[in-house]
Structure formats: structure tokens, C-alpha cells
Image (cartoon, rainbow, N blue to C red; front, side, top):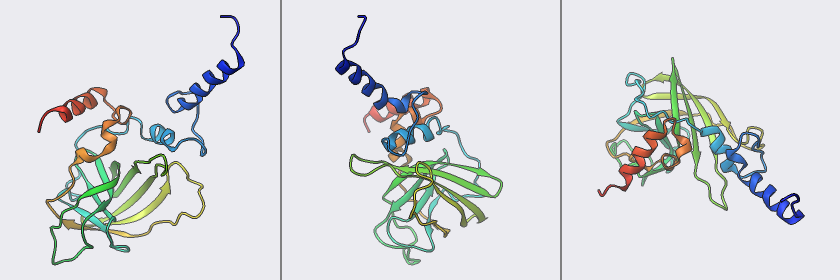
Length: 210
């Protein structure tokens, strides 16, 4: 076909732009769907490798925000490199209830450790009404039970006005009632995994009867 009708040309152009988050020559913008940014920023970020940080991080519990100790402000680290953030429990931290169950986390991502610093990159799962919210936090390891925030920044909207900078100390609480790392919604996305075969094995295991 030598010529394209104008209507057909617009249809083809729309299809290319709408799938731009998977094409190298289309770049995400603040006005595009935020999922585009998430795919770009979190692509192949999960290595599925054991993090040797037992001397620096507690993996047998969670950390709560000392400045804002209410439901939804808990963080949990997993040895495979995943981190859950904005996790919920039924009540605020209480020393008389040291082993309360952590139910679910609204944001998930990965973390890395370098010397005395922990860097986490997380995102919530957006909907057609609520955009994806991706952020990066750096913590100074004061000791194994206390992390102090150094950096707090938005990943997709770094220049967005009106976002307060978080400054708090994350305090450890022991617990054996933590969300399973399989609850991380990112694990179902092939683009999140560094190794595609690992993703295939994970998805196959999900299909097996429990």
C-alpha cells in the first residue's frame, strides 16, 4: 500500500506512542502514564540474590517510623533483596505487643547496602484513578536496630512541589508474623526481574496448588 489514509496514520501513531514505555526511542514525560516511568526505573532491578547483611539489618522483624508511629508506617527487609514499605498492622507500636502481625505492604521495591548506607527504591501499585508513587530513601545505619534517613526523593516526579521531605529514625521491632515476599506485586512483572528464567520459575510456582 503506497499511501496511508490520515485516519489510519493517526491510529498507528497513537499505538506507537501509547506503547512508548517499552520502546527505546519514546521517552516518558510527567504527563504520560506513570506506569511508563515505573517500567523504565525498575526494569531488571530485582536480582533475586541473597543480600549478605545480617550484621547490619534485622530480617526477623520490621522497622517503624519513630516520628509518625501510626498504622501504615512500617518497613520490612527480605534477604532476597526485596523491601516492603508502608506496611499495615492493627495498632501502633506497643512494647506490650512486641510480636504483632504485619499484614500487608502498599509499596514494594528493592534495596542495596553500601558500607553504612541502605538505599531503597519502592513504588506503590497505581490504578486508573491513583498514579503510581515511586520514591527513593537512603538510610544511615546508626546500628542494626536504628536507621536514620539521609535522602528522600521522588523517582518519577523529582521536581514536584509540595512534597515534604521525610526525616525520621527507623526503629526495629522483632516479629515472626511478616508478609510473605511473594505478596510483592512487582514479582509478577517480567520486566522487574534481571533474569527472565527466575521470573518463569516464580510464576510456575504460583500456579502450583498450595
